[in-house]
Length: 68
Image 1 (cartoon, rainbow, N blue to C red):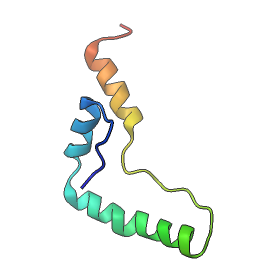
Image 2: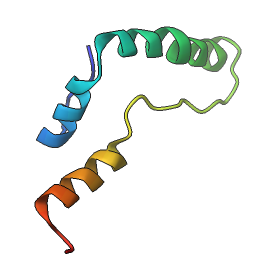
Image 3: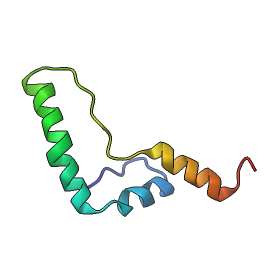
């Protein structure tokens, strides 16, 4: 289940538009290897995010007509 705490309605719409299979794939192929590297091997690595909320913000600004 995706994290939805303190998200705007536009961000929630974006989160729930992502298929569950993509969440499962992300957990298995991205987050699990990150967790193993970070907490078992104690390597400092960067976690690639599943969501790009900058994209959501630019879409909502465009839809509202702000800045035109």
